[in-house]
Image (cartoon, rainbow, N blue to C red; front, side, top):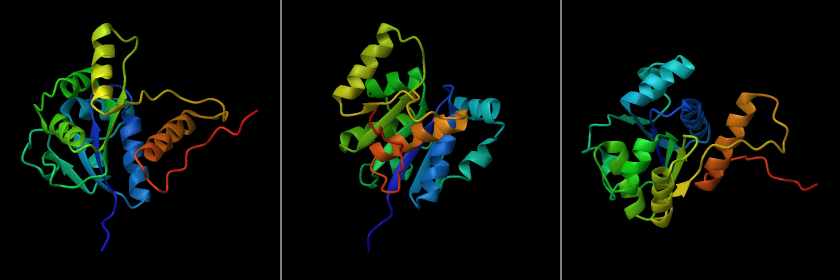
Length: 189
């Protein structure tokens, strides 16, 4: 029997909580098994930006893990996953991943994803970037991770913020190999 696709989703305290929430919603709609790590700062942002509490966000995932639970399934490479997406990814989390600091479950799961040569996508949220940010992004890229700032595409003439978010999430889903992802593609001029 073939297992469902399995994706780890991290939500940190960077602005853009809507990306992580929408990603969980879309993965659920595509019957993808999700494992969520929502950091304490992520909870604050989800509440501030979307009016949601921890329980509401955790209900979107198949499994929700505490950031302090370094003994969770997703802390081991023997637990097969297809990909991990951190949406949004704070500069603190980026730095921890870039330097191999597995100091909580989210950064440990990212480290496991890299060591197992699985797809890791970090939707970094900060602007402008300083040199430390750029070097950390380079480091993660050299390790096989993908830096994916959620920059909107305007060629399909989106009519709302929701349309921008949806397109970005669909692009991420396609990037991690979700078969039912439906990003808008460039049709040429």
